[in-house]
Image (cartoon, rainbow, N blue to C red; front, side):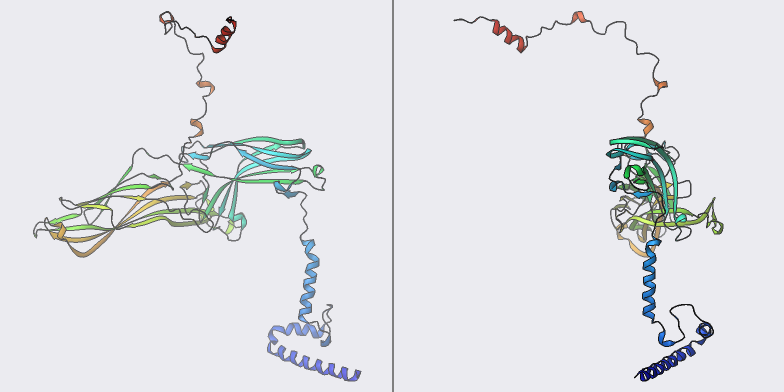
Length: 494
């Protein structure tokens, strides 16, 4: 029996070897070096042997590799950081919270004339034990600019830019705090040239407030300190005041005699309905020889509110040598135009062809669409301009379709189409800005300074403005207490 088993194994080994040799002959160019190494050298791997019957099956090798990775996985996840980071709500000895005391952050005016906005509040350390030792407590306010189409994709340094606005150090050395809430006030004056919070398909700008409180390891009984991190985002807006008078614009469309006059407010708000008054003149041309008149009749009006986004995605230090130069910045220019509101009108205007010239008067309302994307964000951004090349602007586009007709002199109502038409296009620059509400700039509501106070109290007049001798005397009526007292003293009859 052993002889039969050994013979069967040798025959099976020969068959397997024959099959393998046939496979190797079909892929000789790809496996020649591997086969030569197998025949001429001795492998030190425990999974290789000269005998084919002792070869490890592929699934056994995969299982062995999996086991090897499972053994090394905990070592790969070990942390070497000397500080343990925790959410403020998950710490049992201390917590961090804040309270903003200033009004909503609004830059009143443009970048050139705005005096900025004040941010003030208090940040609290809530100590939950009798005594807790804190190593440090710091906070900062920074502008986080995210380039959604960076200069180099998949590069975090090209995609993110952090600019610190102000930093606060509340505790710079080990301090023992007793149970209770400890308040640390903070304030900052944001420069009026800074950009407002913005979110566009190309770039987003956010103001981030971050605080870090480090609890001593002696207070927690651990081998390393604990850091409590507190992150919040501040919403910063800009409000540009409306002009006193509407903007007047005139446009002529040669070779015709059509003239368009428009009156509109150049500063608009995203949640308001804005108006534009339009008048068309020169819609009639008189042919004296044939006693006819050519008419231009308005058939369709389309308005679109367009948003133009321009930015320069800067390159990080690693990619700057290979990036192109855009202005003074190494990076890539990004542009995008999107429509944030549109509508088509086929009626709503008044035409007058009874006079010598012919005219059309209309008043249209336009507004920003309040549609939201899949993330629940509004699909528009207010006007913004930054020092590093980011700019968001808006314009109102009007498209008028007029058709040419002819009619006998004095009979415009009998006009006949000629099959000729024109498209009249006009652009009006507008500024999309936030409502200011009831707020005013901080410098307009501040109390008077020392130099504005007069050197002495106001003077009193020499003569009394009222002659008290001419006043009638006032007789006071007895109070209820006096009346009751007099009643008690009065004798009673038996």
